[in-house]
Image (cartoon, rainbow, N blue to C red; front, side, top):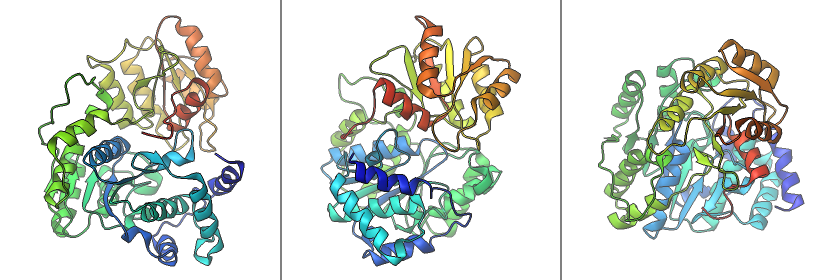
Length: 411
């Protein structure tokens, strides 16, 4: 990425959570000034506490295999900002991004916009300019007041509900479900993944009130092409993606079954329960809340998982439930040594504070000030054993910078 674009993006990062007020007024005005690019393509809108990025990747790859020109908007990125905005699997053109960013900054409606509002406008403008036929759009935070909620999709997906971002979304499953159900549109099919009954009831009620047909995950998995390798972290969300594709087909999107099967088998979503390509002892997963960590340890108990880690490298944000995350990890990996660290994110929890909580949870723990040092120490301590890095996608991205495995230009 050029120095100029990098500096322009860095100027935006400080705006990420600068405002306490969340609404759609600013993004609506900005998009209107840009010619409403979000109305130029069809879309799938995906929300959820966990799994939404993986489901987005699965849906987009199947659509691409079926011959559609696709857009994919996800967050956060792991190493390169351009990972967030992809057309037909390839990240956005750097010169076009820079030009669009400059145009946003020159408009009165572009002033004082948050980081994610600008990201969203960049994505929608890119999709319109590149004649995308169908974009898969991941919600950034919540749903009802998330700035992606200006689209009227062909299908809405809510992958899961758990306790996360409680300071913004509410501290009960029902409250969080209500916020995520805010993306449901009248008459638009809504697909639900696995979630607690308390949350499901809220979403089902909203769907009934808005006349949105309900599709559940109970779709038989399509057969993968012969010779394809199992991908446990993708299989977790496969049925949700298939239900969404089934709903899209009912809306007239041409989706040949063989193309869908091939696309799902080819889908990649880096940073989720996978080994580092250069160091096979190092595995990473971006789980960052108790429900996500629960999914991680469930997958680790599966037949395709590696041996249990002898070292866990953990970095968390200050707004996460560290005590519950540590309880889940301690229950799954009681013999593991824990190394507390932090990413470069300004929201990262200090390693010393995390270590104190880890010690209280019963872990043998030490601290290191950054991710590369912590991973190197973990590999040293593990010997021939496995090191698991988890707790933050930011931390996973920093490990990728040091050890390889970044998503790259083409998914």
